[in-house]
Length: 383
Image 1 (cartoon, rainbow, N blue to C red):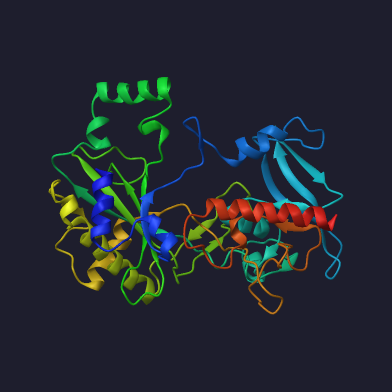
Image 2 (cartoon, one colour):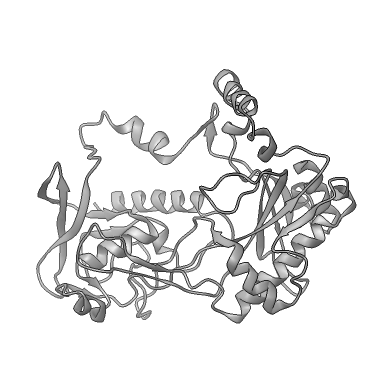
C-alpha cells in the first residue's frame, strides 16, 4: 500500500530519490533507520555502552542534576561543577576541566536558568540569583509541526486491522521474536518525501512521514477502521517559541511554548501542504483504495480553515532545537560561540540540538550526532 502511495506522490510531481543524482532536490523513498538486527540503534548503544569499561568514565543513572556550580566573578566566571541529587542525597561534583551540557533543547535552557544563567528578568521573577545575564537562553525554540492527515481506505490492510485481533498481535510478536522483522522492527513512519508546498518555493520546504496506521493522538488506540496517516511538516518554520522555568525547583518541568503557526508564513505553508497531501491522495495509483479524508476533512478548503485545522491535528515530530543558539559575538541572543562555549563563562560547553540557530531541513538526529562529534574534537584540541 505504501508503494502505491509513493507512486501517487510521483504522479503528483514528486520524483523518486534516484533523481537526486540528476540534479533534483525533491524525492520520495523509504526512510533509512538507525537499526541493527531489528533493534533501534541509538547513541547509548553505539557510543556509551562500548566505553563503560574505561577507567576515565563513570556513569550515574537515576540522578537528578539540580544546577551548575560556578566560581569566580564577572569577567573570570567559570563553571566549577554540578549539584546533583542521588540516592536521596544532594552532592556536588567538581571538575578540573570543563562541564559539557547535553540535556537537549528543553533540558539545557531549563538547567541553565535554574543555575542563574539566562534572562535577568526571569531570574528575578523566580527568586534565583543571577549569575550571568544571557537573554537568549530559552528563546528561539523551533520544531517541525507534524500535520497529520488521516485517510480511511478500503481494499487494503493496515496495522489498524492487523493489530485489532489477538491473532494479529500474536503474529506481529512471533515474527519479531523469530525473525527480528515485521511491524515491531520498523519505525511508525516508513515512507518519506521532500517537496515544495507551492511552485513559488525555491527549494523543498515540506517533508512527509507516511505511516500504515492511524490514531487520534500518540498513546491512544489505533482507529477501528483501516487507514493511513500522511504527516507533513514545514521544514523551515518562521515561528519561534520559548522554554522557561516555572520555579526554582529542579524537578518541576519548565513551561514549553512552541508558538506553532504564529507567523503568517507558517500558516500559509500549513494550508498549502495539506493541499499537496490531497493532491497525492487523489492520484490514480492510490484510487483503488477509495481513500476517504477523515482528518482534516474535505469540507475545509480555505487558507484560514486549513491553517486552523492544521493546529488542531498537528503535533510535535520531536525535533526541538535552538534554545541555546550559536552565534557571533555581536548577536545579543547568542548563547554559545562557534566552538559551543557558553558566552561569558569558562569551562562550560553545550553539545546538543539547542545550539542550532535555525532548524535543519529534515530530521535532527544525525545533525545532533555531528554536533557531538565536533564538540568532542574541539574539547580535545582545547585541552
